[in-house]
Length: 469
Image (cartoon, rainbow, N blue to C red; front, side, top):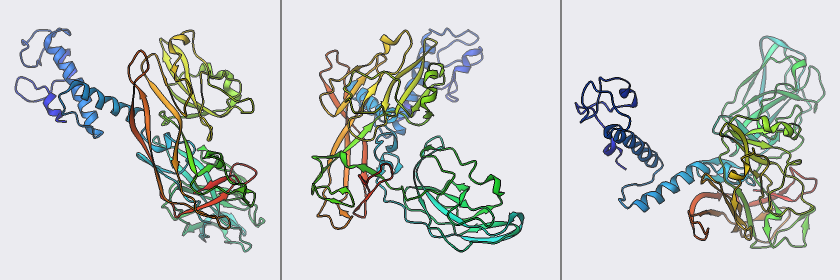
């Protein structure tokens, strides 16, 4: 859209007039009398304010690739609504599919294969430093994604194998580490673990971390007493003090998300999926840019939270369930909570479950005495896609979406499948008092580009029932 059509200029046809210009009597837009205080309700002031708003909206839509050249008002409203929906609720793939923790970029998420076992780096004693003796080192790849605010979400680790020979023997020196291994897609950093002087192999503890996948050099001068401390704070899985025991990287889907169940055949205790199964992808739509973790131990103090934003409740016990069905055998799940101020009163609004399989439920956890005015209207929960609408007009959607994945006959513990794409048509409710009409906003695109192997693995449970892509 040509945003310059809305610009306002001064009497010399230059310099767009700003709100600050109305604080004195030296600047007026065309038609206003000089040396006369501008009435905030005057025609010129009103035109100025309306034009500035129109310019901002036009620029916003232009920035997001939405054409506003159509002069039909309904078409413009529809285009603007879809823009706000796409940008306000669904910007990055990692905000849309909690069950798919892979490499995320704008508008798309790719399922990632597990990281390969990293190769040893090169360790050289150099200069003067704190290290004296013989040392073992281990390299660990870190998988996950980087949030918009610069923080990191970690979902797994790939440790290097143990090595019996000592890696380096400094004499009151530092250790210069070069040739650090680079991870595959989904690797967001590398951690370095080291033994104490003359320590045993396999007893390495955290020594340092590089939160990128490009740097290949690091200098270690940490004294033994500081090993296993000061790990970087991350979301998701914490970076451990000791070397992770196994490779837990790679995107994963629980086999319970394969519609129709699995065959009776198993391999190494893992059910073998049938040919041509359907995968159910859970998703929940909300802004995840500034999420903070709150443990259940502080749940009683949640009423005191006043900072606007989303909070991740790691244990849902002690909160009130939503009206949606909850089976007796289900545990309380982690969920997301939105905190907003309303008339000076702190309100904890409806949250979204972070449970990774099955239906994603919603619950009202706490609100102020004005709770009734914020209680959402919601669907009848008769399908796998759900919605709710708040008193202020905001809408959220969540649920599951099915996509066919072709799996050929299994051999060993490898299952072949074809690449697939998922487009999630988000069901949005029109502003209709009878809630009977809907339209769809194709806001999420998820794709999987895989070498074609599904490998049974178990990073989260005691038996192999997850398939890593």
